[in-house]
Amino acid sequence: MTEKTRYTEEELQEFKALILSKLDKAQKEFEELRSLMLDSADDTPTFKVLEEGANTLGKEEACRLCERQRKFIENLRAALIRIENGTYGVCRATGKLIPKERLMAVPHATLCIEAKQ
Image (cartoon, rainbow, N blue to C red; front, side, top):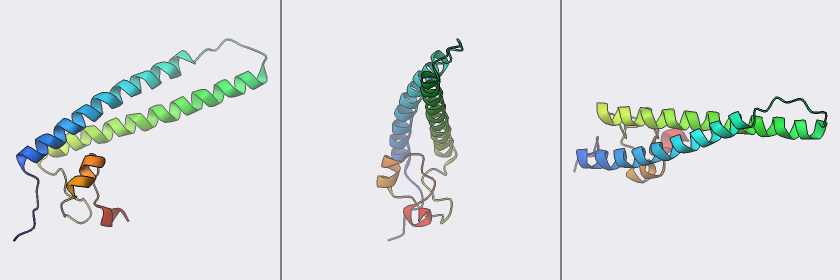
């Protein structure tokens, strides 16, 4: 029996549906984080040093979360492109097929576990 080198069209459509649902959720979360970050951009001067420090930390954390979410969205979009061009699910280091279980957990994965380690 030969080893499978590509996922079937049905499997790719299943992955695509999963990625689209994650993408939709991620974009909503990104917009929420962005609005929180922009809403907390209150530049009214105060003289309460502790409050200013806490506000600054909150803004920095929101900014980090927002950036992380943006990268996740980019990775999901790249996965959709790989589905369209037929390279989805193939490890970029080994050329082997990434196990379906891994792709269901991390649909934007580009490396199999052995290459990741």
